[in-house]
Amino acid sequence: MTQDKENYLKVMAATHVPKDIIDKVRKLNTSVLFQRVNTQGVRAAFNGKTETRIIENYRGVKVLSSYAPLDIPDLHWVILAEIDEAEARAPQNQFTKNVLLTSGLLLLGLTLASLFVASNFLRPISILIDGVARIREGEKNVKVERLANDEFGELSDTFNIMTKEIGLRDTMIEQQSSAYNDLLNRIYPGNIVDRLKKGENKIVDSVHQASVVYVIIHGFSKQTGAMDSIEALDLLTELVDSLDTTCESMGIEKIKTIGEHYLAVCGLSVPLLDHARRAVDFSHAASRELAIFNARYDLSLALRIGIHSGPLHAGIVGSHNFDFDIWGNSLNIARRIVFEADLNKMRLTIPTYHMLNTTDDFGPEIIVDTKAVGEVATFEIDLDTTLDRNRMDRRREQRKTTSEPDRLGNDTCELDGADTPTTTAARQSTAAQTSRDHGKVNEDEGQQSS
Image 1 (cartoon, rainbow, N blue to C red):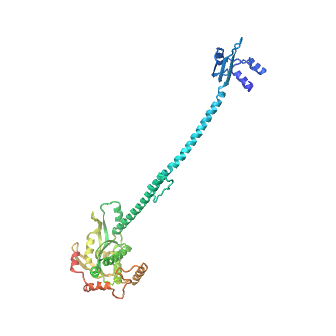
Image 2 (cartoon, rainbow, N blue to C red; image 1 turned 120 degrees about the vertical axis):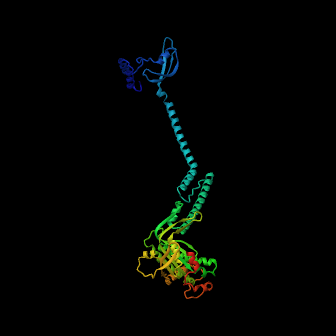
Image 3 (tube, rainbow, N blue to C red; image 1 turned 90 degrees about the horizontal axis):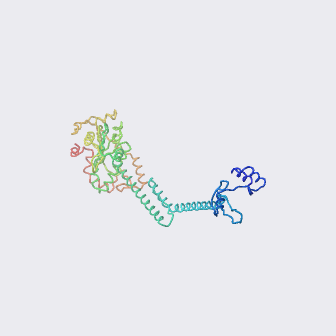
């Protein structure tokens, strides 16, 4: 009443207090002897009870009420003191809120502190997991940071050692794989290597037209007979390397070498319309290479070459020591007619001649009897034995630049006929044979070719 008169009067009206009573209260500015109070607490107090509890007051609002009867003679009064429950519990509610807020802040702080501690604790593990993931993705030379001098630090060191060993092993594997691939590419044609890598078990191809080139290096064994095996091997390797280089530059595929015999094919892996022309051009180029080789080492080697064009089969032969090889009548014919060729000449068959599409006069046909297909008509033409001095000089300069000595120990190529001790011994051992260098091959060779 004293704090909020108007609101108090509204409450009286809401509790159905008669209007005349409300007017008197308003006029006299007091509710004493006007406000009728008949609540549960008043009734209990008149009944002699003394209590403090939550009840509803005359306004219908829950209050904290304390009441008791008064012991006054000739008066039947009670004393009643009330406060709204919300007001009474306000300190308690505020305390509860403070406790909850403080607990929440403490919980948040503990959570953040736990996350921080856990992050620092788990960071080395996360770094290791990230390192493993990088290795799984193929990254090389992965190294993780050492964060502490504890067990995790030791684990990081171990991990780094492990990744280093993995890197070294990967490098070794790559080197071995590269060497393996290089070896395969040196032995087999590129398309055969690809098929081997894909796991093909049986590799065989047939071509309708290809030119087989069969080369015999005449006189090598006899003219190097006085040399030790290392010197002879070095010479043969150099000569074969030069033929291989010529093959590669002209689109010819080398198949194999067997001692002094060199076998190559044009138009096998890659079909070529001019395979016959390439085979003939290769033969002349090989002869020019041999001229340079002879001049360099003061030898008198010669070539016999047989060429035939026709169908051919090729594939991997063998299951243990397998090899890439060719077979068919085209190979048999080329191998047979080469033994009929004179020194520094090539024999080619009529099919090869027709594919050259030339009007050059190759002379009369020469019939060769073969066991494979009977009689075969051939032409014999001279090989180009021109000595390309400019090319030989360039090679000499290259050897000087790279400090590469001759395989026989000579610093320069002897073109004026001067003998070195080694070449003199070689020629002395073969003097009896050089008189027939321009003759026919011996009877044993001819029988072998059949």
